[in-house]
Image 1: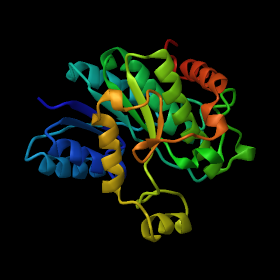
Image 2: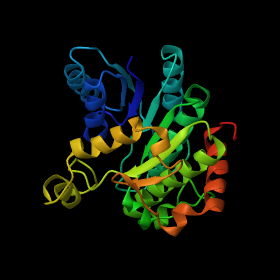
Image 3: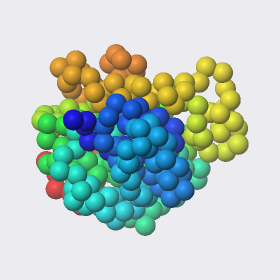
Amino acid sequence: MGRTIVVTGASSGVGLAAAEQFASMGDEVVLVGRDPQRLADAVARVRDAGGGREPGRFRADFASFDEVRALADHLLTNLPAIDVLANNAGGMVGGYTRTADGFEATVQGNHLAPFLLTSLLRERLRGARVVNTASRAHVQGKPDPDALAGDPGKYSSWQAYGASKAANILFTAEAARRWPDITSVSFHPGVVRSNFGVGRVTRLFYKYAPGLVTPEKAGELLVWLATAPAADLVQGGYYVGRQTATPAPHARDQELAAKLWERSAEATGVKSA
């Protein structure tokens, strides 16, 4: 009997590669993506990888908490069990943008939305695993729990992205402390060949620079973290490759992690635990 695995950001890149690998192993996969056409194309690829077995799908834009809540309702209604939640959705915003929910778009899409989704699925995830896609870019930014709306006058796309990736690592570690019945890990997928970034130069780099990691290789790491025996993993650990790594000081600050959790719970309207 295969596992039931939910992959956000599954329309392309690491998420799609991992979803294909899960499907080829016989797992039931639910793909979550923002763009309807890209999501449909991804579903077709995962269907082929699974030998014709139809994967689940749900379109959701993490810039909207209402859409995240609709996703959670869908998953809770349709999935009696969830063995793995891969919080892989995320990206970079070129200029300061505030969402309809009132938060800076990068921190909402990369941190607050996954925090909300995981919190809403918390009871269904008992005994399960949460894998959060972080990044070495976390060294470039420190999240401010008291300023989740951001400051348009001080906005930097790379700092905002770095801060959101640090938030992923902090969330993972704090989840491990608060929810010990769920195995929580985060990882750096490598510098992946993709459509990542904003601006022509950045996008060209992520498409053509030498030494980039393929989505398939990065997907293999996500799959390993999702399927390795829990005893072989470090609860709350941050992985680079198949080894734990020490994140930047601000990304291992337990007081910051606890405060970020509380402010995130307030921002998303979930009960803190």
